[in-house]
Image 1: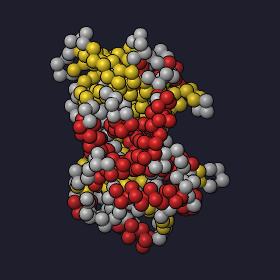
Image 2: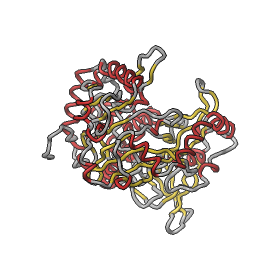
Image 3: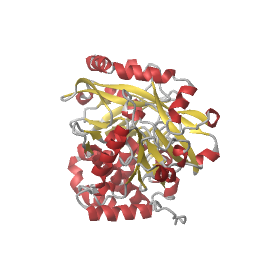
Image 4: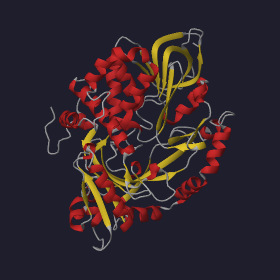
Length: 500
């Protein structure tokens, strides 16, 4: 079978939310293009996009304190929060378009309204939160946010967290009701069902073993059927590598110069999940705290209401951990085989720079259940061990690269697209805010890789995403209009019980 050639226009590697989003955008823009998807596992959305492998926060920077930093003078820089929020609004508009066009149904199966809150303890942190609140509420993107350091008010907002606390404890929170819980696994599966109905060829149990350029500039992929062991050859003009933690190895196999001197550092996560329905019923919010000193940004502790399989759950975490695997289903040799001659110095520099992070991760791995319970009790003072079980979350591979401002071996906490100069291949690396900003990131891929088509595609993109090319912050009337219409379409208006 090795010599059979299968030609297609676009190949998407990995059946996660990123490939699902890119495939859906392309099918809207150029329905005649042939698309083939390869996924190593037996179904879509089973790695990083799976609902148990991520926090499900619709990352709109409403509650995540790591998107807002304190300046030396005590003022708060919200520029990153603005950027993340604008990007999430793009996702909301696209999802609304899909629902309005009947391409996906029952939005409540993947998105639910849920207050987003930040909570801090200690006088200094309370002052920071107050300054952050003032900076954010001056911006139309964050209208509707409330602040309180009054224990009676906080008892109304977060009764489970406020029970058995002394009234003179310095504690404060912000709350905004326009937050969401997103089941990215369900969304991914919905999008792939839609793509299948549009004749996209989705091949599961397929591992991409290698890739090479052909004389006409196309990419030829060697694809292994993991069940039968058979090898197939597939060629395409454009390849997108959206394999989560597996993307780095595939980027290296492509041999493009843009992929050189880039490494990856895997971080695993563990959540605690409440098994007591009475406790679950007492909490209705995503409440984010402040990361401990030395902790990576993705280890910000949070107590989250989640909606999974239309059932309310309560999760706390994540506790960071270390595994050399790049995927939950990966190999223990993933990290070592990702070190190549061109990124060796970058990786060594990162190791030297991040000794404190390595130490922190080792400490986290060694934590006993009781020690983890102690951390949970900072949120729920009277939490009982028997009420909580563990669930291992997905692997996140943070990008390591040389940067002008950070120097050699800088660990990047974010989502990054690496594409070839001719736009024939792109890879998505990194982690949070990831899935929440998938639509913005995939539009970025289209702009970088198909510059010759963007002008002709623009009217259709604007139809799907009315704010395309505009800043919502600078267009408050459009922002209000989009907020209202997406909330209506996606069923995010509280007390709305009838879904058409």
